[in-house]
Image 1 (cartoon, rainbow, N blue to C red):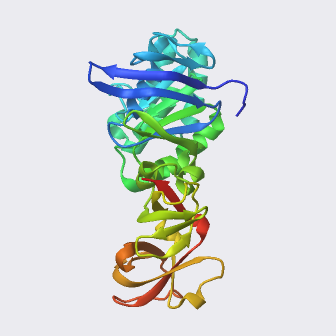
Image 2: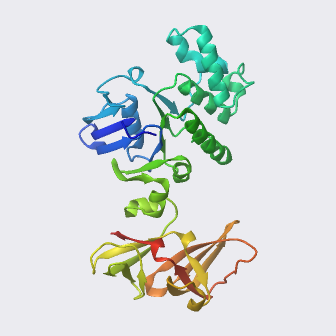
Image 3: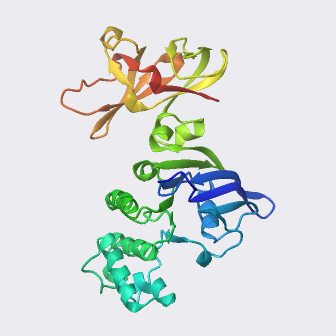
Length: 359
């Protein structure tokens, strides 16, 4: 990746449909050269509309879009240095794999020998060697998606746009394809802009993520920053599992839970501010006594209100009275202590694992 020029830049981009619907609301965004960038959010948040505007399938009502410094204006898709992969593979059923992949090159009147070379490279890139003569109806869903990807990459666009391309695949295949897509992106070295509502998908593949909500960018950052340091209640609740507790800021770095317990947490709000304390269940630990917990951490007393076996993990709900309850996820291993309903426990967590967010 280089810092010289952004692959895609959005400046004050707004998209309205009619008078009442604002699908994208005053978005500023820069996608870097050579990065895997995901637009993440629930249905209707504006992520697909944003992608379609980059592709030239929709045009902004206000604002501008640049691709590698060139203002796109109302340039149609075929005049933009991008290609798009959709959830529906849109393969030609009467064409075999290599003909599907080479279709766009043939439309450009490229020399047949060059087409064969480029198609062969694309087939090898997506691991479809040996299947060149098969038609789409003889391919699995994952294989069809590979062909669609190869067709989009064969002429090496400057930016590849992907609109929930793995949504039609089953869970295990989707997880496999996530890793393959990231490997392919690293190999070709071009910018991928990926739309998904699947948080795990975005976290697994992305260099950076933009979390969208109601047409706006809630937070843009690296996967680990989005997960570890959510910037709003919406991001905290949408990305990964989260435990929420009502609290009030006591002083810098300390909050009081509604049950009266004072715990240390990440907060920059003024004393007296009502906040919501957000904690990841896997960052919490259980002990029988506070003395068993490591020093320098928070320790809150409670009792087991619910336990759920989830295979690799155990989930516990810990009631702390008027202060609410903690959701705790513990790795399931032979040395792990099991807790029963009603057991008295201490919930232990590091101050850096607790983020106080404005309500």
